[in-house]
Image 1: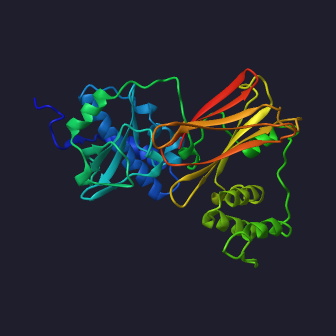
Image 2 (image 1 turned 90 degrees about the vertical axis):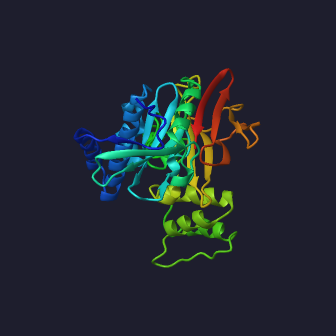
Image 3 (image 1 turned 60 degrees about the vertical axis):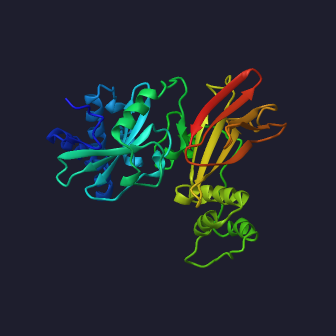
Length: 368
């Protein structure tokens, strides 16, 4: 029998039960376009799953994000989990198409990207090859052969299971990690907060917006068709000043927190994780036009406390382009009602956030 890795491509038949599973996932989707995406993604994952099983390579089909209803709904995702190794992304390509698109939400945390051609009847999937590094689009000529894939899988060291990452790129698709609550949800659970959202009237809110626009070359528009929310949304998109961007975002959080240009913010309650201290860590993310992300990390006091305890330290650590360790921190002073750090991240970046108070420590790991 010929070695299954010696073929330049390899075709796998898809059974009626495979198409049925894909149809079930597709029916959960809100639009026809999304249903087609999920249907093809599911078939591509199944093709790779069957191929690796033929090579005696273990896979956990139902452990993949692609087998999670929330992840399917919120992201264009087609991963297959390999125990002890990581995740392969299985991207479908229609019959005869020259290139395969790779969505930004899967540009990180992948062993590689396998391209699977699905025939018009959806009865056969053909593995065309793979690449190890993501790009917005992959052409057929860029694909590496299947024997190279097996070599990489055998040389990949086992994962360290103790460190999990909060996937910020999935937040943008409304897929959130356990323990991270919506801002309004956590507020409603508190009898008293040291900070309050502003209840600004649409008439008076123009003043701070005008102040933000005064530093920009673009003039502000005020008429019946241009609301304060419109002005803030536009400013967030066009400004190159990160301070202005975040000030505009905070105003938009008060006026229209569901506005898509307000980005995403979530909080985690620190009381069970930082020696009982009643505080919350907020992480907010704003996509930028250059495909990077603006991040805001902020620590608030909770319940009846008006200020943070003096000495509370917020620290961010990561690696620069040369692999050198980079750290940034801020320490709460007397009468600080919050502390914060801001940073810019690229897709695939990883960093850690630590909070320290006396001998207590809280740490979380993030991936963009």
